[in-house]
Structure formats: structure tokens, C-alpha cells
View (tube, rainbow, N blue to C red):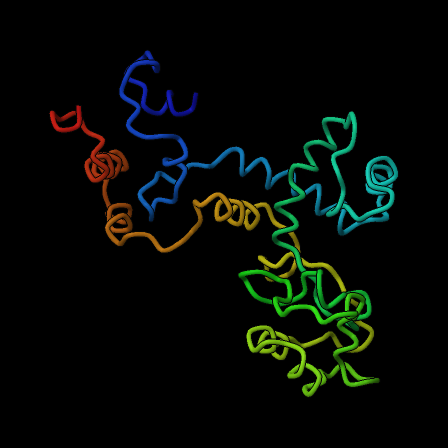
Amino acid sequence: MLNVYWWGSGTDVRKGIKWTTWDKLCEPKAKGGMGFRNLHVFNTAMLGKWCWKLLSQPDALVSRALKAKYFPRVGILDAAVGNNPSMIWRGIHSAIGLVRMGCRWKIGDGTTIRVWGMPWLNRDSDFFVRTPMLPGWEAVLVSDLFVPGTRVWNMELINWIFTEEDRDVILKTTPGMGDAGDRLIWHYTRNGVYSVKSAYSLGMQLVGEGNEAGHAAWKIIWKIKCNPRAKHCLWRFARGFVHVNTRL
């Protein structure tokens, strides 16, 4: 419906040629799109804020109520939608996958983070250890990688266990000092708190419409100081969305 409205002609929006799909128009301007919001991804990012609230405030009344009904034995990131769920829970559950992709553990004392199977490495590609797990090491904690009695990495042990790729990331990570414990953070903001803007950006990357570097020509068009309608006209010419014989 939105695509029909955008390409509509005159007072009858049903008329006119639909030159491209709405998904293409939602691509960033630097990649040849119009930068419109992908409403499905944006809605998921908004619902993710509720998911993050349940994750970061487990003692809140709404968190305890939903946990008791829908995921009493597991954490919210591992919760199933369940049978006959309410509309509220179904919406929150639809955002769990997005939240799971963007959160990781920030190391404090390392006593609640398993080395394998939990996201704790500080890198953008993924937060999990890629080194194959050693037999019988399923329950090994991050704290076991410290020099006993300290929060300093045991270099000899880390060099023996991990591949170079994982080892470099681990050694660049500084554990929390003092009484700081382990805590779950949102990787894509500086303060570690979930934001709809960063979640939307992550969601767009996951659907293949992220903020990768675009073609310089598109940036030139949108930086021209002229009437917005003129920019839009240039964009249509550049995309070939014009009524000429070769396009009809």
C-alpha cells in the first residue's frame, strides 16, 4: 500500500508505474534508495525495547508476571512463544531474536559467564568463542581464565586453549575492577543500554539493507544545495525511473 501511494499519479494513487519495490526504497540513500523506514524492522526494534526491559529489570512487576507465565524455567532469550500466548507476549517474543543478536556479557568477575556457548567477546562479527571446545570443558567459566585470586588473564592458559583469532580479542578485553560483577549489555551503544535506533540499524543489516558504504554518486546527489524536488528528480533519472521509450 505504501509503495502504491508513493508511485501514485495525481489524485488516484492506484495509477502510475511502480518502478521498484518498497524494500528497495527503504535502502539508505547512499545505496540508491530513499531511506524510508522499513516498518517491519522498525516495529521489531520498538518491541525489542520491551524485551530489553524484561532482560535488564528482572525484578520489575511486569517482568516477574511474564516470567511466571511464559518462561519460568529459562531466561527470556531462551523463551518459547508457548501455547495460546497473549498478543503482548507474542509481540515481545518476535523481537527476542534481534535482541539476542545485539547483546553480550561485559566481564566483571567472570563467575557467571561460560567460556563456550555464551556471548562475551567484544567484536562486531559475533560475540561467541570460535575455538573448538575441549572435551569436558562445557562448564568452564571466564573466571577460570584468570590468574588465581586476580582479574588478570592467564596468558599461558589462553595461548594454549584458543586460536589466534579468539586470543587477540580476549587479551584486548579488560575485566571489571573492584566489586564489578558480570552484566549483560547492548553492544551497539556506548553506554551499553538498548536503543531503538541502534537496534533498527542492526535489523536492517540482518535483512541485507544495512549501512554499508554506498556509491559516491548517490551521496553527491543528496548533498546538492537545491530544492528537494530537484534532488528527487535527479535521483529518478539516475535510477532510470523516467517515462522514456527504453523504459516503457
